[in-house]
Every structure is written in C-alpha cells, then in structure tokens.
Image (cartoon, rainbow over all chains, first blue to last red; front, top):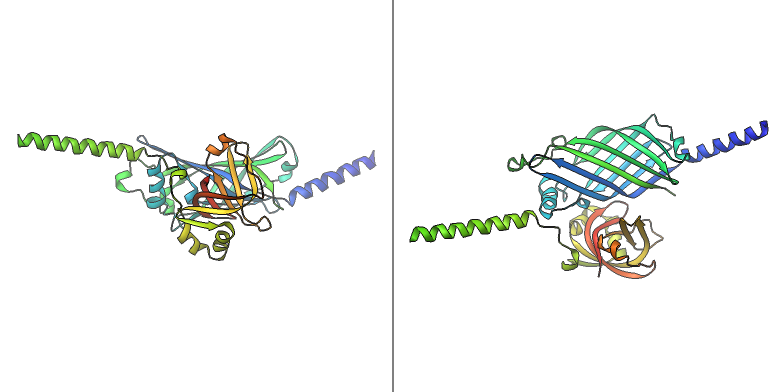
Amino acid sequence: MKKHSSVLLFLLFFSVTLVAQKKLFTKTGLITFNSKTSIEKIQAVNKKVLAVLDVATNKIEFALLIKGFEFEKALMQEHFNENYLESDKFPKATFKGKFDDTNFTILAEENKTVTVNISGSLTLHGVTKPITAKALITTKNKTVSAASSLTILLSDYSIKIPALNKNNVNNQVQININLANLQEMK
Amino acid sequence: MNKRIVLITLLIILCSAGIYIYKEYNRKPARLNNLPAVVNINADTLISQFVLNEAEANKKYLGKVISVKGFINKIDNQQDTLLTILLGNSLLSTSVSCLMDSSYIKLKKVFTPGVQIIIKGICTGYLMDVELNRCVVE
C-alpha cells in the first residue's frame, strides 16, 4: 500500500513538473472589438493573433497585426487603418503580462475551468498603458484554451476621433480575446 | 424656365451624391480574385526580406496584394472555420502564412504538402511568419 502511494506521489509530482515546464502557444488566436453608439455599431475581427503562455513563469504575451483586422464594410476598414490606428506607422499591437497567483496544475486535468487575473501592458498606436483583466482558462478534450474580455478607451492610446464622427465612434471599445487550442511549444 | 432647369439639375446632383454615398458606405472589401497583384515573389525571398529588415519590407508590402510562389509546408485547418496554408522551407521556423478566403473552406479543396503553388493575398505584416490575409489560389 505504502509502495503504491509512493508511486502515485511520484507520478503526480512528475506530471505536475512536466506541466510546469510547458510553454503553450497559438498563431490563430481570435480578437474581436466592438464599438457601439446609438447611430453605428462597428465590429472587426483578427484571426491571426500570436499568443504565448509560459506556464513556468506565469507570463503571457500576444501580438497582432493591425492590418489583420477585417471589417464587414471596406470603408470602415480603410478609415480604421488610415485615420485611427495609422497601421502603416504602427503595424502591431502587443500585450505583455502575467497571470497573478495561478497554479497551473489545472492543465494536467480534464474538463476544468479556472478564472485568473492578468495584469500587464498593452501597446497600441505606439502608446503603452497598464491594463488588468480576468481570463478563463479551460482544459477540454486534451486541449487548453483561454478567453478574456476587456474594455479600453481610444483616448488612452492617442487615437483621435474626428469631430465629424464623434456620434458614430464610441471612445470606449470592448475587446474579446479567444485563444483556442493552445499547442505545446517544442 | 431657368429656375426649373437649375432645380432639376440640383435634384439630379443630390440624388447621384446620395446613391454614391450609400454605395460607398456599404461597399464590401473587394474579393482578391478580381484584383491584380502588385508584386510577384518567391516565398523564400519574401521571408528573407522580412527577417533581414522588417521596416523596409513593411514599406514595400504592407497592405498590398501580393502573389507568392512557394512549396506548401503545412496545412492548418481549424475545425473547418480557419484554413491556413504555410509556404516556404519546412526546415525554417518562418513561413509565409496564408489565411485562405472563407470560400475555400466551403469548397473543401484539397491541398497537398510539398506541392508548389501560387497564392495571392494581402500582406498584413510579420509576426512569427509573414502574414497574408484573404488569400486565393492563382
């Protein structure tokens, strides 16, 4: 009995150690943003978000290309790139942050969801600001995924809304992040 | 009589402007099948240009429709919602990552690794790979 317990303890320790060394990543993370006013609803999606989650250090980083955002209307996409985000000048947005107080042993278990706090800095339009958000990490069918939602103010990132469009574009923008099927980095 | 002609002309101008604004506001992003590529380039050349000098490569290709010739090194079909074809040398860590137009998922077209192909897409920049969006096969 004692021998079995020792073996079990060893296996548990071994699997936890393996999990703790993992770096998980995706090149096809999804980020959508929504800006809503009484006149207009603006929505765009970027399907090629690069994200790396370092389980050993609790760090998370992601990067995306501003020109990768796709809109339903071409004019909105052109204005977004040329007048608001100036994507020729600032082609990328990045986030570097950390999960607070997270025990990633959850990654070794099936069908688990845990809520974690993330804090870090978001660089957008050449401006870096600290942000915090809650995220859900889920393990299902032997895959790990992460999702989060946060709100930012365009004015925080020196993104100016022309006076003519003040009623069409909301300064407050909701961002939804969905990193499905994170793969182990080899 | 003159007043009438002026009024009718104004009305025509206003109507035309209204139609133009409505059409322009609702214009969908153009399908790449109908757009000519501004550059035809080999996948390995494109990758090396971005790896060596990203800022310079961005100036040349960012937001442009480009046609890239290369060998398929990987096909990533994510639950039939996202189809990405990676072009370039499979031994290198950087590829040209072509996010295919959603119509290719419906078509269920078969792509084979190792086969040479020409893909046209809009260059959105460089992360771990050189990224092309809304891609179509030429």
